[in-house]
Amino acid sequence: MNSTKLRLPLISVLLASISLVACGSIEQAAQDDCTSIGWNIGSKGYEDCYKARLYERKLDYSLPPGDKPSPSLL
Picture 1 (tube, rainbow, N blue to C red):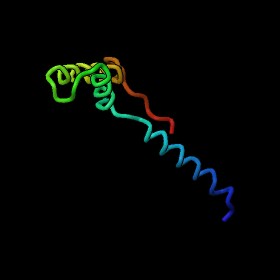
Picture 2: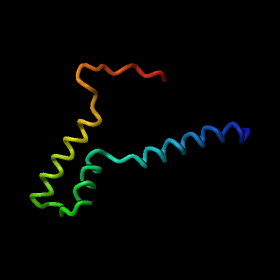
Picture 3: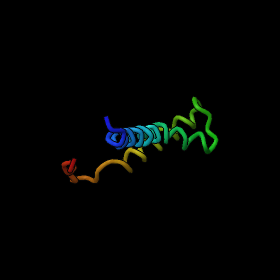
Picture 4: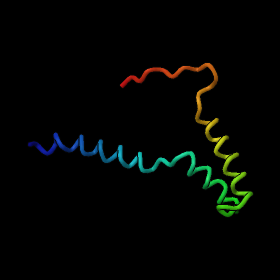
């Protein structure tokens, strides 16, 4: 096969995998928020902070009330 035909799909797969690896979860971000301000994992303060930050982040990434997701163009 021609190497130029393989190059574009290979680059696409590599870029997609890198972007997925770079994405963290909402849970990890909430944990990072609480540990960055000094809470120790397992402490009462950490648990309260984690629950609050998790709730806030889920609100940030949720759809507004009454908003319906649109179909993908792909």
